[in-house]
Length: 292
Image (cartoon, rainbow, N blue to C red):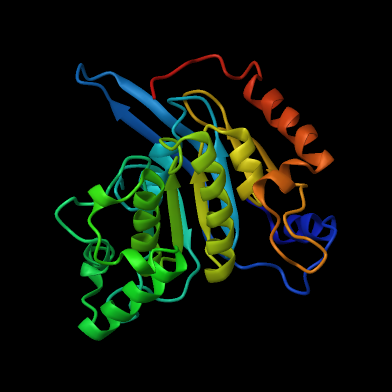
């Protein structure tokens, strides 16, 4: 959702805790549309008129039916797809070789570790494009393996790790590049229910530690509410923004400590908000079903 300066001020003043300054946007998307051609040459509209802003240090979750363009949107943000209409504008500190950081980094649902590399080497691989000095690479590998709780497994190979640990490697590899925007495409979908809860708690802790700006695609409403500051619901193909809601659930306690996912779910506002999102997903605008 794109806000004018007056609208952004109005939205901000409605919040319980009014910040002294408006958050700065990390990325702004304006009227983004994406058209594909099938093998038969027929046009397929994947996205149409998508406009939204993601503020720095904010986590934005995207929900929507399969085939609605969620992953297409991530590809555009990642710079992997540049054939689109509309604008994607970045308000950021400089990125690239001179600044030792990437514009974006992505964590996928599938295991993306390379089986012939150790944990440390898998994480270092994500820094290749930055051409950092070896000392800096080593320091980042040590920092981010510790951040994700794998400091004792730097020399381990992927076959020696659980599914959750492999995803921690992928998360550490993405964060080590210090991206302006962290893109996550259903990163916990392949994990069992218990491990997902554990990883949700870990993600919340990690993002808070490094002040990550995150766009998080998921099909899981409870996961979206647990992790995100805002939740966007998209329509069926062609994907449009159906709703853009701020999450009304508390995720910190009296001493500003992070609450566990189970504690977050115990908030009475959690269930009511989940019903609102379910209503959005069941909206009559979901008239066309696409493939995942």
